[in-house]
Amino acid sequence: MNEQLKERIKKISVRGRFAIALRILEIELPKYPVFQQSPTSKNLISKLKGFTSSSTLDDWMEETDRLMPDIIMEDEGSYDAEYFADFLKEEDFNEFHKQYKALPNSFLSVVCHTFWIGQTEIYTSIQTYSENTYKYLLEVIKLTTVDNLPEIIARYEFSSFEENRGWGNRFNYDEV
Image (tube, rainbow, N blue to C red; front, side):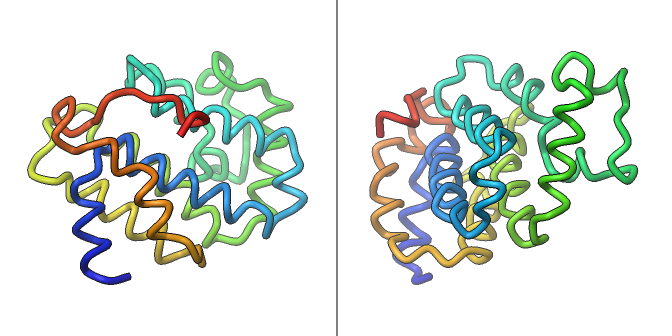
């Protein structure tokens, strides 16, 4: 990726960066047809889409955190009812575990990095251009083979890092 694209990304809000990562994730999904067609994938994508329009990002994080591959895959996929019960039924947890286990680590890393773009600055004051979310997005880009990256970046440049203390204004992911 060239330096000009990297500089353009620095000017995009955290919500916009998240949307870029999610768009890339959606583009990569057809490489994994069993996962793409599963209710698990649809549930995951639906929950992730909520980030760009959420008015309470900490609530979004609370609802989605337990869907992160690292969380589902730890402890050999054993369901902890106290931890998951309010957010994920055991049969849904087991399906997520089964689906995640069948995916390559590189794709699971893309999913995790996408989550981290939304979560990493959630309880902090965002400094400069949010180096942390920037690095996670660059990792998503590095781990994938998206051909139309400049167009994807352009799609979300409306969401400026200057808006809402770096977070950008809320928007409906499906309408962009």
